[in-house]
Amino acid sequence: MSSLSNVAELPITDRRELVEYLASGNKPRADWRIGTEHEKFGFRTDDLRAPTFDGDRGIEALLDGLQRFGWKQVQEHGRTIALSREGANVSLEPAGQLELSGAPLETIHDTCRETNGHLAEVKTVASELGLGFLGMGFQPKWRRDEMPWMPKGRYKIMREYMPKRGDLGLDMMTRTCTVQVNLDFASEADMVKKFRVSLALQPIATALFADSPFTEGKPNGFLSYRSHIWTDTDPDRTGMLDFVFEDGFGFERYVDYLLDVPMYFAYRNGEYLDLSGKSFRKFLDGNLDVLPGSLPTLRDWSDHMTTAFPEVRLKKYLEMRGADSGPWNRICALPAFWVGLLYDDASLDAAWDLVKDFNRAERHALRDGVPKHALKLPARLGNTQATVRELAIEALKISAAGLHRRARHNKSGSDERVFLDPLIESAEANLTPAERKLALYQGPWEGNIDRVFSEFAY
Image (cartoon, rainbow, N blue to C red; front, side, top):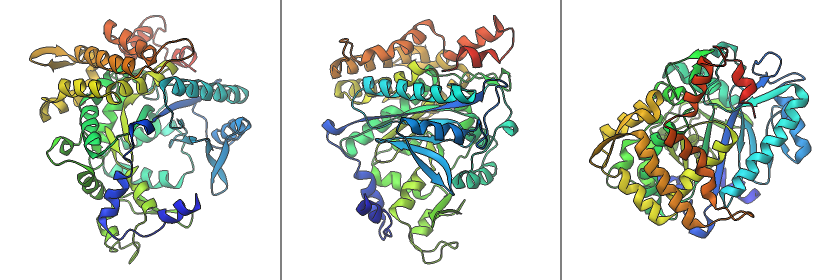
């Protein structure tokens, strides 16, 4: 551990080191793993407000309570801001949204066990504190100014910078939750193919997982408002990355993209230095005015990579970033969907056939249209005019075939296809989770958004 840490602190002297850092993610198929992350909103069960960091019922008290299950605390300035255990982490988003970053696991069965175990631990401690947790893509009740802020140095810098680049960045930070999966690649060519397929299909995932139709207690006109928020957060670090589909794309081209993403910070001597808007290229040349003569380290580069927010993000693995958070079965469904598409060669080929002739305008029309229309958005399937629903059904068939060929069974003999069931049901019914909640809101809930906290809490 210490030798790796020492390497991370050595100065970078050549741009090639950045390319090699990404390329070091190449893994043989036998070592491919599944890393699932999900976020959820905490609320106080008596008044439904988001818990503050401090206090007897605060988020820090929850983190401290979780340590009984073997989690080790991670501190910043003497305060518990995260937990770690056996390759997994529990961390905090800016307004206290609780995130599980799961360990790298071999099967979706493992992922679902991990998810269920985590939610059971959280529920045990939360119930003692009078707290509950809700999985949705956007905070359904409270205004931005009613959300708390967590005492993390990097969030203070981002909070001050975000409004300079878009109108909804602070909403992204405080009022959104997502579920993501991190997946491996074998080589640069394998990475490129998976990146292109997953980027082109990311709007399909957004549509299938759309679950953020409310803002401040009322319908907001969107099915995935969380996805819409990313269109007005920061154009320098978000979007569909058209260059991924250009000839010659690879690790080097992605490094060039990241070098042009403005910085947020650097971590020095236990503090986050505000470098918002500064150039990593100048940092690499030792010409950063705030740190004159100082060169970045691999730790700086690793941190910087986490401040780009495209629909698919490359680190030493690929992150699928298009889905709203949701109920526990959809936390398991998201990795199943992408593993079925990307971890089987025949499925990867079939998925590429589905999207390879999409042009830039079509990709952007999908990305920009699904937040409002989801499965009902018009789309092209081959030479036929269709909707996103038909694309989703085809993608789900390809994914199911890939999971079938993977043949990873649980003790009951079921393979990983079982985790696609909520998505298949949604696509066949042509109804997203958001539309089901809207029907409840307009029907039995009689316009009372508070019902979502009792009926959809974990």
